[in-house]
Image 1: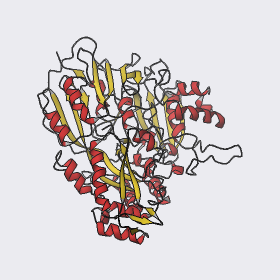
Image 2: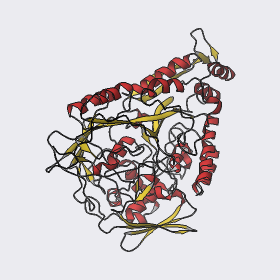
Image 3: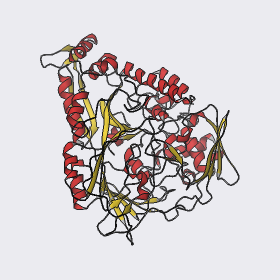
Length: 609
């Protein structure tokens, strides 16, 4: 499921950070680690295809070992908390390298990572105070201690208190859309903006976070820690905790861009593995972190081999070029995998959901009636029947952007827009002042209703989704074109370079993970790429952040979902069916809906030869 975007709010990034892999023909060895994401508190329904063979002997052979994972989308950055760098492809690598106090488990619960932490304690609720005690042995891969400064940097970079960048005259610098440019390009401030202070004891191993106001999702904070001593050194700031406003800008300058790509001096590990090399377009290699203080991973080396064409991955698995794959599934891929001897394949209804996002900067889509008309011509049920039912006969359309159908809090918030209605779509366009020309395309003011459906390429399923939408919406007067790009998710999405974007959000363990998507950019919406702004969003989210009652919080997020429908800026389509397949020479591969298949790569092992 790498062809998706991670809901990045630095408030839930770690859980254990892992990487996935595929094992090379000659090997024997051991090693591993894990990571998290952010999204709805809901359960996952699994539907497994029968394994093609029985599980092998789990005895780990002696000698060095290597596993190779087929990476559909390439790693881009070591800082998944930056608004323009948060990709699921990065999560799959960072699962194994970045430390944090909690592990996010497959059932969407949190567990204290006891290899790193002596304890995490909620010592007070009024005010809310959390004490973190980091083990003395916990160090970065260069030997520097993991502790106070790293927690402080996470808070500093994502609490929003550094404000906006200023011109010489003291006014805000503005981006191309007229929005203030924040000092830190964080994906979201949720949770961290409610922390009044982060203080430390003399050892630097006991950290105390004191909150201004209660924050229900506090367990999601301080995941995916970055090495603060590296940021300090690279920015020329001696002590981040006592930095002046001018120094903070220097820290932000490096935090915003310094982790892009791979630099061994910068990308330090606090987990089971570290990156040894990154060859863009070819591979990324993780090797054991010799400074890791906890239980070593089983596999010595994990290779992320670039195989962007999902249709080529089954053959790579059969040939032994890779040992683990997780391509976006289609019936042909699943059938192909099930026919391969010595391979286990499963399909799971996960927490990742497909959707269309509309860019309100587009002159046509700025009109609500046009957005509503588009929603009424998107053939969601046909997509499910054509693309999902052959994989899982229980698959259905999704009428919520927050909860999946198995959640007790799921509510149909699409209402009248849940089903295709071409005639009503036409009527809405007419109300918006459009007339239909002789070619069947609506136009207004001499401009045809022509829109691009952006998506990442290659992706056969998304190509088919767009083809179905183009055909259906043409009946209403839309002139839509498929607009694929290999780096669509990594580059064009954060740049808002699309009319309508087709992609997936990876949900996680906290409801507040949605905040960075729907808040206005000025309020911390670092992943609000479709330029939507509604002041009621912040009102609802502020209420939800301090509400500890699950049912009441869910109601507030359902109100948010209804608000998104009322403004019709995002159209949910369906839960993605998530395919994982691996050679039976590898053991310990476990499905995780929001962290990906590499969440427990430290526990992978090789079967006896």
